Structures are given as structure tokens and as C-alpha cells.
Length: 222
Ligand SMILES: [Zn+2]
Ligand SMILES: [Zn+2]
Image (tube, rainbow, N blue to C red; front, side, top):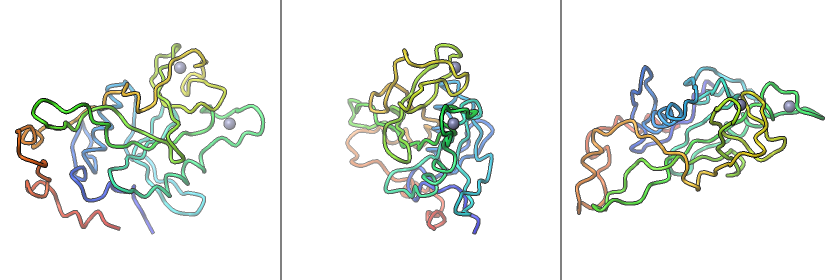
């Protein structure tokens, strides 16, 4: 069975969204691309079909070629993460003593979540943009850090040794940030219909379905 990357499911984020030269499956993926750009992190969208140990084919959303990192974008709700977990397990370091992997600790897998919302505005509108939110397939202990040697922003765990994934410089003295620290701005790629949401006292924002912006969400179901 050919399976592509897990879609975020039927939601306002499941609208194919153009950003730069790429059409993403969802607005959330496009927002993640813009957030990576904002941090000068190089990315490739769905560059590779990976055969997992189980034989399952999997197309993760983003590969960060300078950081040896995969990002699977997961929308709200209870997303399926089995393939993402298996990818992390397949690509992690298996060095018996000192790690000699091209990427310290092996390839790294991150789950990109919808943003942590910034505070409500005076109109009561909750903007979609806020701060980047992420986790690993195994838990939340992933940190954002900037390498002092090569200046590359990246995600890492606290598993030692703490080294830059790109240039292997030490990160021991650097300040690291969790997603809940609200340090990494999440970049919103589209405004469009979003401007309607800023009107006060309308209750819940319109769904994209109500606005006629969605294509059939059934297509996203397994
Ligand atoms: Zn290793
Ligand atoms: Zn570096």
C-alpha cells in the first residue's frame, strides 16, 4: 500500500496552500515552511519516500538537509503518529560507543504542531499566529537552540553530547528553549479569509466549510 504523509484531517488547516514555489497539503504545513524560512533553516518538502523497518512506505513532510532532521506536521485532534514514531526509531543513532553518525545522535524526527496562540486581541479574536509548537514522537523534551559557531537554528534533545547538528560545535553553553517558552514565532502564510475572523462579537469564527473554502474533507480520511 502506498501511503503518503498523514494528512492533518478535516479542519481549516487541510486546505492546499501555496507558499513560495510549493503547494502544501495544508495551511499548517505552509506555515511551518514560512517559520523555517524565518529562522533561515533550509528545508525540502516531501523529498523522499522512506521504507520503514516494517515495510511501510512513508513520506515525511519536511527534510532539513543541513540539520539531518525530519519534521512531520500534525494538525489538531488526535493524529496518527505510528509512522512518525517508526521513522524516529529507524533513523536514530545506534553507535555502541562514541557517536560517529553524520548527524549527532542520528537523524532527528520532530512533530510540528499548530501554533501556541498568542494572547487574544482587544476584539476577542484569537489570531492563528503565535509561537511555534513542537514535540518529538516520544514526548515533549525537544529544545530549540542556535549554534554559536555556524549560527544555525535547530532542534535538539538534551541527550549528551550537546553538539550542533550541522557543524558539531558544542552547544553546552547555549540557552535552549522549549515550545512552551514562546520563543520561536510561528509565521502565518495566509490572511485572506482570516480577516473576517477579526470582526468582534460574532461568536466562534466561521469554519472554512461555512465560507466555502474547503474541498471535500472526506478525501482526507483514511
Ligand atoms: Zn551515532
Ligand atoms: Zn553549528
